[in-house]
Image (cartoon, rainbow, N blue to C red; front, side, top):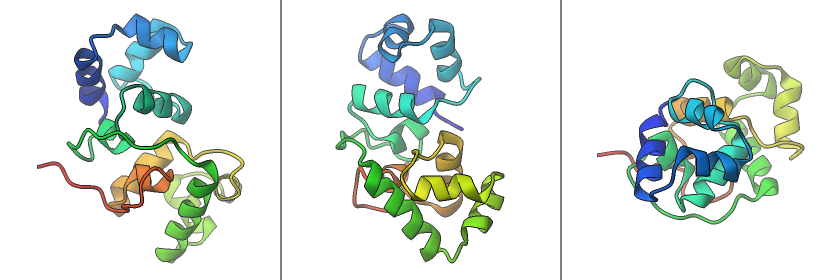
Length: 150
């Protein structure tokens, strides 16, 4: 994933330390440092908190766009609906999508039923492979395409 540069830039822009962000996320500063340096993947719940804190889109954090715009909060029911619509529009079965993401079909079914939000690596993979907005899939915007970086 490619979010380390934007996380550092946002933290600098907001003049906030890694320690302050780690306290907001209720994690150890070292863990946040690992997020920022892309040593470990940011869990979706922390990615959402960071995007809301920095008033920006997940697409911006992921580096899919250079538009640094505030979006509404995530709507879990819409996120599950959008994932299912995405899958069907791309003529993918749950099993095929699970295969692409290297997981099992029950994981995809749980996402589509709204039991859990999609995991960050799966969200990133789908968005990158199918050129679709993470914020759209999570129900934060109605624009399915990412406005590309210039």
